[in-house]
Length: 113
Length: 115
Image (cartoon, rainbow over all chains, first blue to last red; front, side, top):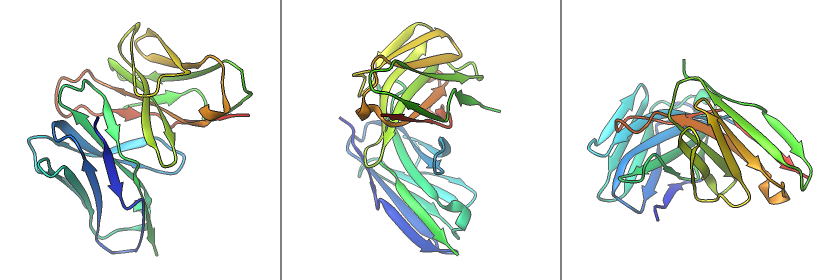
């Protein structure tokens, strides 16, 4: 059974700092991996999706990498801003797993002024 | 613009009540999903549907049922609500998995409290 782990569970950084969020998964037979953002009391918004054949994806100040062989993904946020404060979740879709996603428990990020 | 709506943002029910949570999407998506989200446990899939009248159990279907009579609407039913079903419930939809880039779009969530 696929297990997805995110460390740390919570992170607090000063504004302007570059930071890395980590995601690890136990089954490397993944179809794709996604990073989502969730604001308090709200639904999830997709940030980046990396296909299994890709190594990384970039969107603005966000860069996500994928290393299937080691079962890891990182989300790099450059020049963090208070508006980046949210919970970040990674989710994997297994090859042959249909449309099901397995989610990590998330990293709660706070960017302070 | 993609839109998934859920019938209620907050709901308070009594133990033993029958509870309906409604989800509607306007994107003509084939797939629809119901998750619950609890602190420390993350999102867990309850049920999903890949077509009208079709459904499959997720990881934690016990105590829940679903209905999909129309493509755009997916309902989650708690036959007899219990306090351990107090949670945030999230609905999502997606296209059938034609490409490796199809993502799930989420509704705003329903915070259900069972007293």
